[in-house]
Length: 345
Image 1 (spheres, rainbow, N blue to C red):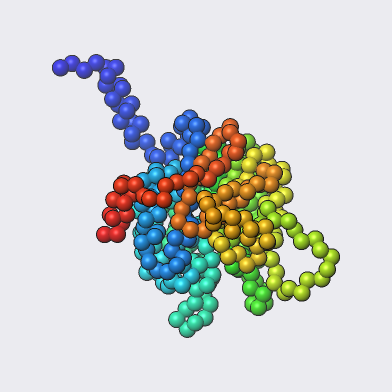
Image 2: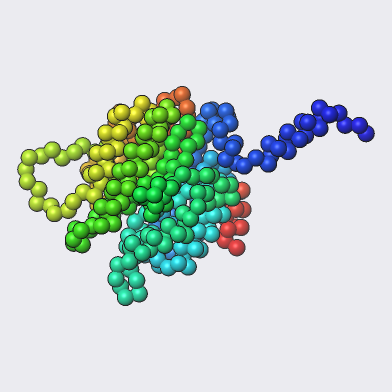
């Protein structure tokens, strides 16, 4: 049988397209029609049982999100051992879509060694080695990331990563929920102060990049809620609280940068007990527990907390609102149940 040259060319083109890396497909015009990404909440926070996390990963894989962001890898009550870090990485790596890890306070800030002494910084550095050694996401499909550690001055801060998808810039920022790991009893807060400088440079770079590229929006993922939508306390009465707000610097910077940015800015956190948050934040979170999480807006600044299980967020270019939390079925599909069964083996 004679095969036409035109047919051969079509077959070759199809094979070439199939062999291209997944990253190259991101720039396809189809993304402009909109897409959805998933955010894993603290499904492990009630204890060391992996079942809720496995279930969430199976469901987001069946959902076929563009990518998944997991804020945190373990509960504060769990071990900070290398063994657990490695086991949890293997579990997260089973995600079908690309999965990006955004660290939480429970991963490192509460860690103690065998003598009961705090070893948060050592554990943070170990997490950087285990989870952020290269520029690839976790997951069966990979996503290429740009890390703050590519800058010589901030070579330690590999956990801060950004990626662009469908006209939106996404980024993780290490802002732990325990008041940004500000320790008033520790004298000079070297870890807090050094990370404050790194995050300041990181945020400046992200907004400058998004503005230069005229992107539709920026999405920032963190553990702690910065409180960008809260009203500042301008009372002239003296404060008798000795507790410093560890999020004050990032909050002011994000507000200032957002005012100069022409697109939308969405902050996503997955923690529910930020010690420094204001009354407005607590009220929003209490209302969100009644139903699906909702995004609250002030001007072009938005915020949503997702503190359990997982939620899907839709990105709709050219529409209002640009970002929208999608309602999802509480019962997993047959495909998700099958995936969960496979992960448990």
